[in-house]
Image (cartoon, rainbow, N blue to C red; front, side, top):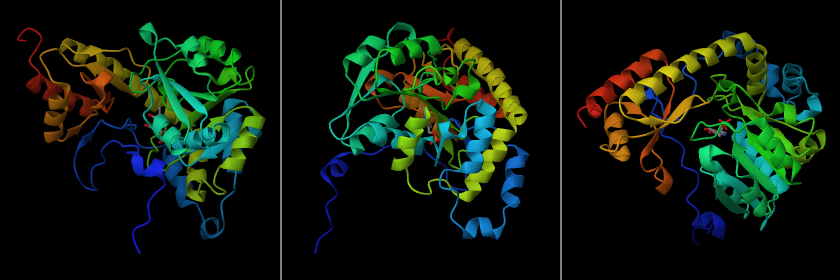
Length: 357
Ligand SMILES: Cc1ncc(COP(=O)(O)O)c(C=O)c1O
C-alpha cells in the first residue's frame, strides 16, 4: 500500500498562503492580515454567553435564519436575499462553484484578492486576469472580452485599497449575464457601496464579512446579498450546516450594534489618514485607501522585502507579496493609534529620511 495520490490539480497547486499568525501568547504588533484593532461589540460576547447547551446539542439553522432576519432589516432587503457562510471565503467558494464548472472562466482585474485564483484552480475553472486601467479604473471591456461565467473583484480592492464607483459596476453588470461578484470585505471603511445595485441588476452579488469591520476574524462569518434566485442556487451548493450556532448568535449581535461598529470604523479612518500622511513624510508613496490598510511603495533607496524582514525582527508584522508587480510595495493594516505609532517609530529608525537618502 502506498500514500494515495491527490487529484492532479491538487498535487500541482501551491494552495492559498495566509498571512502569518503569531503563536498564542507571542507579543507582536500584527498589521499583516487587516484585522480590526478593536474588539467586537460587548453584545457579541454577551450573546455567546447567553447560549444554552441545547443550542449546541442541536444542528444549527441550515440557512442561519436568525441572521437572515437581522441582515434583511439592517440592509433593507428580504431574508431570501441573504446567504450566510463560514467567513466570506466560504461564500466566495460557494458562489464560484454555483456559477462555474470545469473549463469555465472566472475573470478578475489584477492585482486583487489572491484567494480567487486558488478557488478557480481547485474547481478546474480557468482564471483570467486583466490589468486594472489607469487610476485603478475597472477594466470593463477587457473583463467582458474574457467571456467569463463569473467576474470577481474586491471593492475596496485588496491590496490597493482603491474603490470603484457603483456606476462603473453597474456598467459592467448591464453588459453581461455573468455573475458579477463584488467582494465588499472592506466596505465598512469606505464612503460608497454596491448594495443599491442589487435591486436593478439580478446578476450582482455583494459579499460582506465580519472579519474586518466587526472585529470578528476569529469567529468566521460572512454573507452574500443578491437576487433571491442567485441565493437559492447558492443554497444548493453550500454545506448543509455551514455556520455554527455560536457564530450565528454572535453575528446577529454584531450586526445589530451598528453604532458600536461605526465608532470603530471612524477611529480606523482617522488613523488611516495619519498613517498615510506620516508614511508620505518618510518618502513612501501611498495610494489613497478606502479600506483598513494602505499599500505603500517604498522609497527607491529601500528594498521592500528587507524592510518587511527588519520590521518582523522587531516584532512588527506587515505584508510583503512576493509577486512581480508588488516587489516594491508593502501592505500595512491600520492598527490602533499605539500600534501605528510603534510602526512609525521603527520606520524612522530603519528608513533614511528623504533628506538623508
Ligand atoms: C478581499 C477579501 N475578501 C475576503 C476576505 C476573507 O474574509 P473572511 O475572513 O470573511 O473569510 C479577505 C481577507 O483578507 C479579503 O481580503
